[in-house]
Image (cartoon, rainbow, N blue to C red; front, side):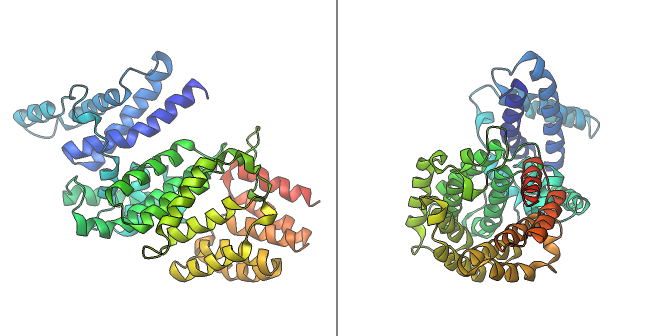
Length: 405
């Protein structure tokens, strides 16, 4: 890892913590986010040449706080400005600036006064550090639509004067579903990045797992929180085997399973076992159970596909959607043959939500290849390669197409 990449990873980790501290103290979510962005830019420039300071979090908090003071100097009377500046004086080391407000920030972004899509988008931006384009890709919508959604959410938070506190028990339960979805999307963007030269971003997957662990401590009896943590661990356990030394993608069936993290798999399986049958079944528990079946198979050939298909049948009843249907089509193909999977896949051709993702064509190419239809498979792989901005996925799909002649 280069010094520049270490600085970049550190800034991504610290950004939501600094933003959470500023919003807790001063409100004004939009102004605080702008100040943090300016501080991040200053850090990226200065730390690259001078090195990372001893207290990088305090450094960012000080710079961001000063940006806020500068921005507010023209807003009110002298007394008010002096009062604000005093309030923004960075605390001494060891005081409350070291408190991690990231989870509280997540709950703020998931406030019920915002629409659910806005809650998700704003949290991914503020906590996950995703770009507007990455968030748009996760939601399967155009980038301009997502930019408007995030802007409106910030304005709503500013105008409503929302308090920066963890919500009380009844309201916390109402927001929990969206919080879980946000953490899941942050993890997914880290596990398979939507754009760029790298297949995954460990900073995002690590932060998503950390926040989910923290959330579990807050609500230890929530089965879906346990299920999501299990799903993340069981999925992330395969990370070391997903790429070759040159960074190219290795599909699940070809992965070297002795590279999988057995400690994470054991913890994930234990978590799934602890919640299935003891809590109201939900989509994250079911997805974790599917991941556990994959991870416990000694080889790809020994995967229990009938069990996976049975779990997908339940998942489609509990949480129907195009991505579930897409994944279920693969299980159908492995149990009942590729043409059965292709028939199910065809039901997604008119679903507008799949128009902005390459995954439908990628899966279609795979099933067509299994069915022996090499010409059609090659065409699907090529279409999928053109649709993704992820360079490792582009390369993999292009090579699959080339291998078919």
